Length: 234
Image (cartoon, rainbow, N blue to C red):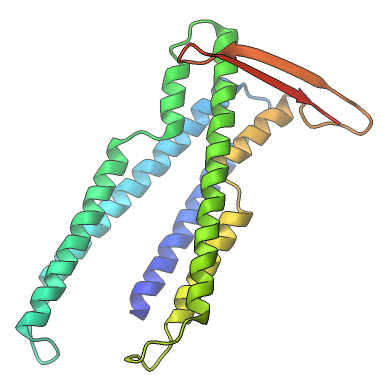
């Protein structure tokens, strides 16, 4: 059990590190919204491929590991059958999830594909900016929801009574793991949010002291709807 918790914590740290590296690679100033959206789409595609391949490989490895379980002094035949059933189901879920991740494009990839179909450069740029805003707001909402759920789970495990059949209280390890996940969600901004801030800084949206800059933008979305964005610096 302790080994499994350590593996989960390592996987969480790898995912956080990967997302930060991908976000750092996007930090190129003074780029257009279309270019930044393309960079974001490529970064999310890379992240998706890494995650899908990793999850699929873990599923295959789990299946191979489960197949080596044999009955002996510690496990009878019934215990082995139960472990193998659960293990094969878990391996199948991981492999299936990995294949789905590899097959389905991310939100940013779909938006960039739609934006590229617009012929007018100005409309394409406005649509790209609207896509950046949409992706950033969605990522922020998901980040806060995930952080709230992790924080609730952390409180539950940290204050939960230890299992009666275990000498050591493993709940505290689970609580610390969920607390780390909550802190990561609350304090580490997503790549989508960072790249939107980068674009807005490049466009002069960051107000200097004593200067007010109103800005109004209109354009066409890929689905034919009109988009209008008004901003005022103070």
